[in-house]
Amino acid sequence: MKRERGTGRLFLRGNIWWCQYYFHGEAVRVSCETSDERRAAKFLRGKIAEVLSGTHQDSRNLTYENIRAAYLLDFQTNKRKSLHKDKKGNLYLDCVKRLDDFFSGYRVAEIDADLIRKFHADQQAKRLSNASINRSVSSLRRMFNLALQDGKLRTIPFFPMLKESAPRSGFFERDQYDKLAVALPQHLRALLALGYFCGLRLSEARNLTWDQIDFIGNTVTLRAGETKNDQARTIPIVPQLRAILVAQYQARQENCPYVCYRVDRRGHAVKIEGFRRAWQSRCIKLGFGSMVPKIDPVTGQPMYEPARKDRQNSKPKPKTVYTGLRYHDLRRSFVRALVRSGTSEKVAMKFSGHLSRAVFDRYDISTQKDVHEAGERLAAYLQKNGDKTGTDVHQDAAVVLPIS
Image 1 (tube, rainbow, N blue to C red):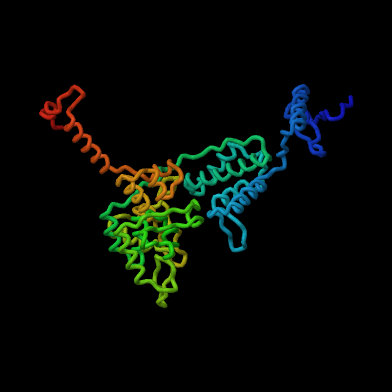
Image 2 (cartoon, rainbow, N blue to C red):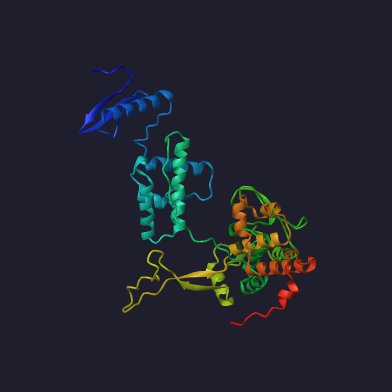
């Protein structure tokens, strides 16, 4: 029988019922995914109710490329620093390029937790770390959330994440800083001091100019929009750093505005760019780092360089990776020094530029030395105030422990 206008219709395709209804003047045909006519009719009534209530979303033709374009546009309009352009002017993100290789051509409705787990396995087979894979999955989740906010989706799938290795916990002791300051080339010493005494990120230290140094007020000012989180901050200059900056200022060239610079072959002062080899070689020589074999995250076996084809009987050399002190460890040391000096955590977060307490706590690292000092303070307190626990400290001290 002919159905009433606005109630849609049901029809069979093989043994499966399909329904048709109108949304914004266009006919929509979807499978009811059932061979039971009553369930199909209930499914159709639900779709029509969504249309009438304004909650209906037609995501059948929404593809990965659609939500990817919205994600990149969001990065572009918000001027995110992690967004790059290739030689052709196309926008790209490293974590999104890995998604493109796997999810291109998929409809959004086809992307679920099972497919994301297959993406995990595919990336692990390419020897990517779990942290890198998780960054890509986080980008995919952000794409779905943007589509949900824009009203293109009603629900989003579950996004399984992989277990990551513990974050780095390296830091500099003062004697390590002093030794490295002597060992590094002259043009890198101011860069090292800014990291240790101000906690500047490497990009912040390399881009620092003389108009951001106030020798009268003894402050270093990082302007808004030039930091990682785009927020300005002011950091005091301690006497040890002031002496280094004054010497650097006296030796500067007028045409170079950068605080940290090097002199090129023509005698011109230019901005410092990469210094990885100089850093690693000095740290290894001082015993602050070493080159260790690179391990395949999938097989757990050492990785090797491909054999050279231009030499006969050439044997593949094992790949090595540097492990030891890094420049960013200076920033952790600065945060530790602030907290140990009695500076309130709120003020310390303003100096370091941390917006999240969770991230700040990762930088405030407790060492074995801190544990021993805390134990000594606790023992001194108990001895001064007497033992209130009902035990006699002096009697316990006289007990002779057996020697194993």
